[in-house]
Length: 116
Image (cartoon, rainbow, N blue to C red; front, side):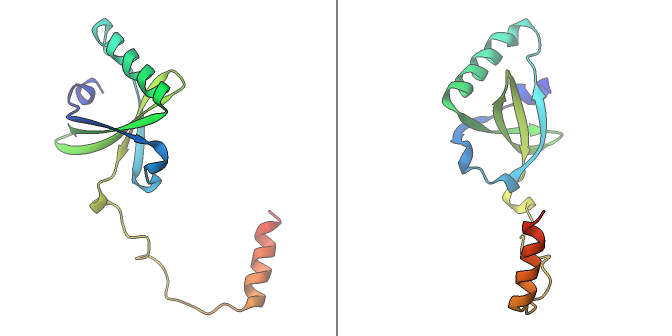
């Protein structure tokens, strides 16, 4: 991961509540690469921890531009890869055609789920 960390192009802080979870993908725990990187790593980790914010980063990884969400988890920095808007499928596309459901049907189904 050190190649990824060395290539951060932009850093932008956001409140975690403003990030749509559907955009967040795989996660990686980051560690500093040697003694030289230990202090910047710790400073960034402390700054993020104090602010209760996350950082959106843009970088090149595996030959393509990627977005990432950088956050603190316990005492570590965690990088979550993020999807670009065109990589997210419209959630209404895979829905089946509309069907009518009676009140009896929906009431009995709700009762089943509420008992779980």
